[in-house]
Length: 125
Image (cartoon, rainbow, N blue to C red; front, side):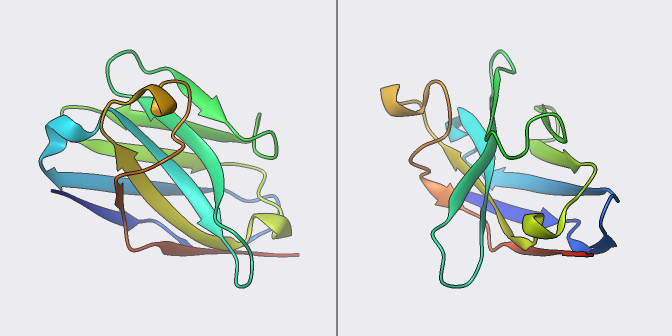
């Protein structure tokens, strides 16, 4: 089992920045790829970004490319999401997720095995 705990959400004005953190504990050897998803009420959860453990390969949703940066510190079993130039449409609950190695999760995190509890990000216009 892997436990994921997010932090860093909050309220920010459009154009501002936030950094989310996600600390993994438990069976951290299973965190082959880690990433972030987001969800608004009544909508499906959508992929935001992911990063592989071994080589740091990253993948981003088109909607956040150039504004968000995902990184990880393997010594701390923590993944970060630096969000710059935030827009009101970025408002959502952001979830950290991770998966063990599988062919479907090689390029981007598609089917997580574990989820965090979520952290609210609100961007005001």
